[in-house]
Image 1 (cartoon, rainbow over the protein chains, first blue to last red):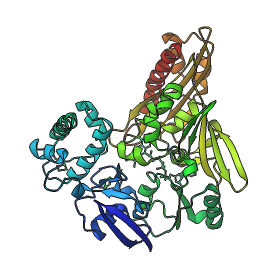
Image 2 (image 1 turned 45 degrees about the vertical axis):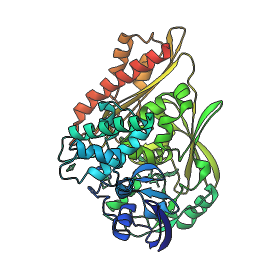
Image 3 (image 1 turned 90 degrees about the vertical axis):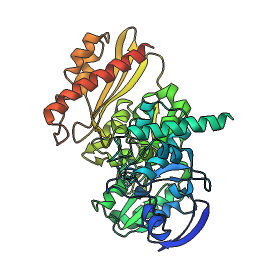
Image 4 (image 1 turned 120 degrees about the vertical axis):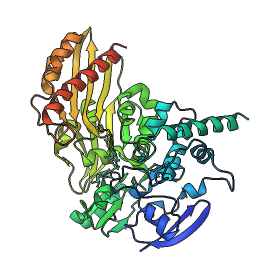
Length: 159
Length: 287
Ligand SMILES: Cc1cc2nc3c(=O)[nH]c(=O)nc-3n(C[C@H](O)[C@H](O)[C@H](O)COP(=O)(O)OP(=O)(O)OC[C@H]3O[C@@H](n4cnc5c(N)ncnc54)[C@H](O)[C@@H]3O)c2cc1C
Ligand code: FES
Ligand code: FES
């Protein structure tokens, strides 16, 4: 066992973990933050995407011990109190989900995409979400949801 | 799926990492970006009992451009993709790297990890071959420099000794008259190369005075295409010359077929992508 200390969604947690514990299991099973999903065994689906020190990563392909001393944001930490993040609002408004399984990872990946490219074209949104698979929507409304958030965020920054 | 149990070390210097490698030998594995190793451990295709996480070794990270280009082994794809300096002096690197996997893979995966792993479908392997890069390693006996052309020895196998680390990759800046390009046919789900072609050319007095072409994805090992290179050398680099040289591409290398693409199809694509990479490299060399 190794003792790690991680700040998740603004709150610091100190826990003993086995080195082989994946970050996604740490979040879901030790911290009960089950918004981060597991959709595959091959690091390909993106359901598990969280931000580690502000950068989007697949938490199924990161060890919990590697997050020692780091800051993690999960889907549960994205809203500002009762106010949804523009991406959450966009997925709501544009029906960017059906079953919702892929949605947390989709939103966390899109947040990183918008950080590097605040005004992406539809093609750039699709390319930027290459690591996120959705079995339901056909992606159309996901692209619209991200577009909605990009527009809303650019208005907010222009203010 | 959960990896089998292992002891975890996170050294902060190269010397410390090497002494751990010496101590634990075959049982130990280096962990860099983890985007080849952790998936393999989850599927229990790899089950090291000791993991040496080198991501805390700051000296292995970053790009330095002076007389040549020195890229630390731990430099992530993301850093290479967005590096301002690299675009001007070796644009083929960010061009190729931007096509790897997805944003999350590029945020974690490293150049040193990809070369050490030598996945037959990796992108960077072909690029370092075309750039004639040098791979700097460090082991118990000190430092070595291995030419990329001597590095990839077999499927998933390299000239790296068991107790050695890759510390950096060194390549030349591209100047006037030089051009390089990477053209890739990605697997639609994983984005790994079904076929990838990297090309470098130098023009002197209107003639091709240097040329290197490397193919990844098609066979077990990333492979230089000596016949194509020879055919283009001393030519005027015209479309006809490229078409002729391209006919040689892939003809003498091992090519594998699988459920994604048959051997014949891959052989055909090797020619198509060789032509695209060479044509773009030549256009860039002309400026
Ligand atoms: C979904 C997905 C899609 C991908 N798509 C692509 C793609 O399109 N193209 C592509 O090229 N790659 C792709 N990859 C692979 C990715 O780029 C890997 O990150 C890379 O191949 C390995 O680098 P790493 O730093 O993650 O290495 P790790 O996984 O940490 O290590 C890989 C191997 O190299 C050894 N090693 C690592 N660093 C060193 C070092 N400095 N010295 C000695 N040995 C070392 C390790 O012991 C291990 O055996 C993909 C991966 C995933 C999960
Ligand atoms: S669970 Fe599928 S990529 Fe992490
Ligand atoms: S909404 Fe069901 S997987 Fe995307």
